[in-house]
Image (tube, rainbow, N blue to C red; front, side, top):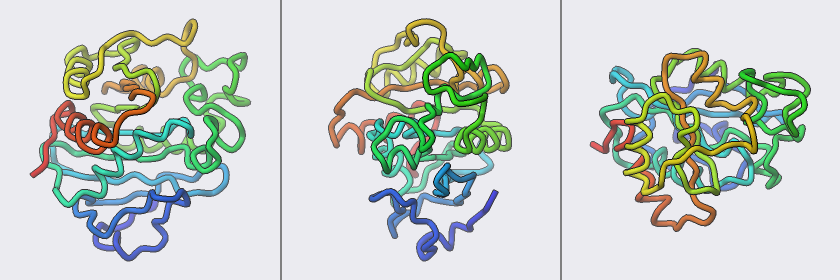
Length: 244
């Protein structure tokens, strides 16, 4: 994985994410480290930004825009990333946009028309629409798996739209689901896939890691205030972090 020191964040032109509006601001004081964890089908850098304390007891990863048309969570994660206030109490990584190719083309799937959240190895099925030619066939899927295997986080929150719920269908930790529900002002309920869910990030992580992965669905059209204030504070509080 390519490491970029925090001190080079401001001037490093290579950090442009090739999707308008996703460049870190010059005031991104919260960022401590940047990693390019892999590349998309079309060669875009997939980047993870570390905020907070690397020595904290809990490591958390927040992931946005696995589906290219579900862009609202990126605003929340960019607000966290670009903030002037440091994050404390948690070792926090944010990936504002996983599916950069899909976001650029306003398509749910990646550039090969694969649904990344049906491409993970756990319970993968070729018969599912958009599952890909094989489990983990996509570079975006493999990049995220390598990154999560390497840092082995305690919590992964996968942010989606548009159902407006905290999905408890594969939850391992009821306390985390309750905290996310409370802080994000979203109800808790099981979200199914019209039957068993195949090839999902949360299913794979919860089977292969000791930590907890959970899906949070923002609403269809959340307000700017919700995305840049309520959700920012709520996500931090729910995973045990705060602003210094």
